Length: 134
Image (cartoon, rainbow, N blue to C red; front, side):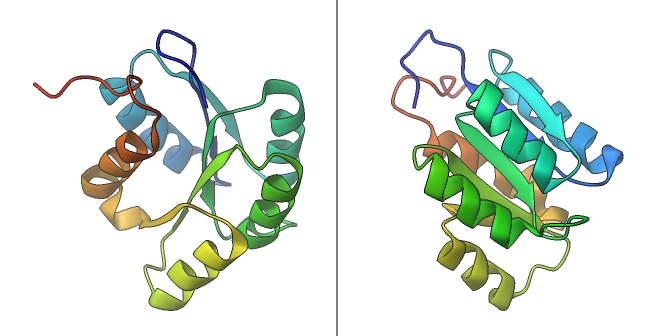
């Protein structure tokens, strides 16, 4: 992904601005060195993948137009190095399984973002990119 000291780019894709802002606030608190991008639909996410080459994407499943599963398949086909964490308000095993089958590295229920998302992101970072534990 990126080497220590390099800029790590995270893209948050959700059709609800409040969810995007919440995720970005959580991430910026724990990882202040990240460059954060946002998109409200899968089509915009694909464009940002082309132009900005994010390292990691937090991607909602339910989006207008193309859903997160299809977006994940397309992103992984075109940019296999991009890591995707799917998230949904429906924290059901069927969504978790479908997310992983589409190529996501992990699935997080939106209700568990504050407890689960940051450790998952930290675990997906290359060595030396995560902040030291206090």
